[in-house]
Image (cartoon, rainbow, N blue to C red; front, side):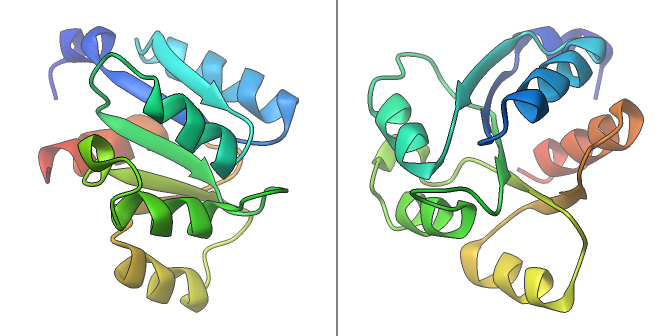
Length: 134
């Protein structure tokens, strides 16, 4: 993707750990993505999506969170909890890439996985891959 595209992207980060949200904001900013909405868990993300008045190009979501974890959030989103965003590409953040994650990705129509904490270049590459396939 052309580098000037990143500053027009709207991204949601769903992550329960404050430090991880801060870190992801820095990494996304370093590749030119400044339009980021943060949510602390799946419930918070669904509530924020209901009130979002802009488009959304990508969701980056942790798997394990209190209240509503990543897979439950994705399941609800994919089944139309908020119809406008049911097909938004989703990259899941994980502690490790496992066979279970690969199976879950197919079931939940997840676009990709990144091992935490993601570094700028691999994240940029994943975003390019996910959005080019959109």
